[in-house]
Image 1 (spheres, helix red, strand yellow):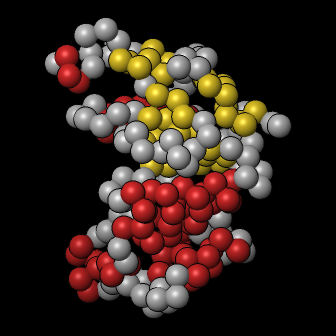
Image 2 (cartoon, one colour):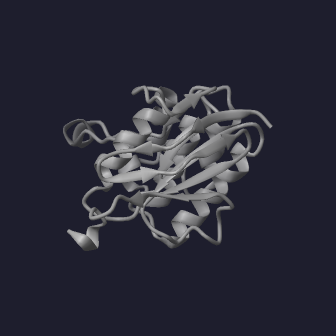
Length: 196
C-alpha cells in the first residue's frame, strides 16, 4: 500500500495529535472533541494536511484537498437561484462519473435549487464534486445527524477504497462502529475543556 500522508505527531500549547500514517484506500477519523476550540483546530489541521501550512512532523506524499462547504450568496440566489446543474458545471470534473452520482437521489434533478436540498444530500454534492477532481480529501460532516454521518462516511469509504484516501475531522465520538482507524486529539495537562 502506498503512503499518502505521514504524521509524526503535532503538538500545540493546548493539545497533541498522535502519530499516524494514512495509506491509499483508507479513511482516518481524527476525533477532535466538541467545544469552542473545534473550528480553529479544524482549520489549523486541514491547512497542514492539505499542504497550505508546512509542519516539520507531517509529510505529504500526495496532494490532499479539503471538501469546501457550500457557500450561498443570498443576494444572487434571490434573483438567480443556484441549481444543481450550474453547481456541477462550476465545481466538478464533468468527465467523472461522480459528477452525476448525486442524481441517484431520485428527487434531485439538474434544475433542483440548492437552497431546497437538505444537509446530507448537500454534503454529498460537495463530496462528489471534490472527489470528481481528486481522490485524496480532508473533510468534515458538520451539521449532519447520526444517520447522515453514517451514510456520508460509507459513501466516501466506498469511493476512496479504490485508490483514494481521506481524513475525516470529526467532533463526536460516534464513529467507532463505522471507522477502523480513529486517532483522538489528546489534551495537554490543564487544557481539557472540563478543566477550564
